[in-house]
Amino acid sequence: MSIATSVLVRPSALLYWYVLGLSVCAGAAWLCVMVWFSSLAPWLFLGLGLVGVVLVYVLTQRELRGQQKFFRIDINGDGFFVLRRLDVWGREITSTSLSLASPLVLWPRLLLLTLKDEFGEKQRLLILRDSVDATGFRRLSLALLWLAQAHTQSTQQKNVPGGNF
Image (cartoon, rainbow, N blue to C red; front, side, top):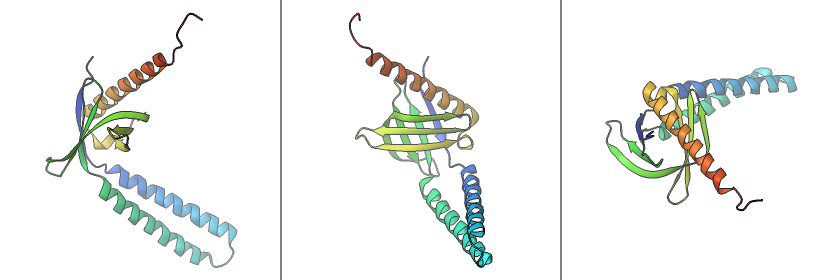
């Protein structure tokens, strides 16, 4: 079986909605705590909470827009990764050789990859289901599952003590 695959990853549209939902939940929690522990001017705390939620959401969106880019993940038959960052027109900006590191999260609608470059620096990639087409997501998740199992088996074989006792 060959695990070689190449997948184009686009910025996720759902990630913005997830961040908005988390911001609203954080604002509601802030409001509940402030109303519960304070009998002084709950409208003041409501206003502060609303401003805080909007501020957190805007700053998070700004940070996400700066980090989310198009990229292509190429996995060769040996399990090594090449991460190619692309511009909007599909031209390559940078290319980095990486290998899979722990932890690896494989969920039905989310992949969280921890990749290590040749200098030992780790970077994490969050890939949501809407970032990749259906066949690309399936191929990528199967290749990652195979690599994780191969890595686990090789680690177990290295830890086997020698001798007959």
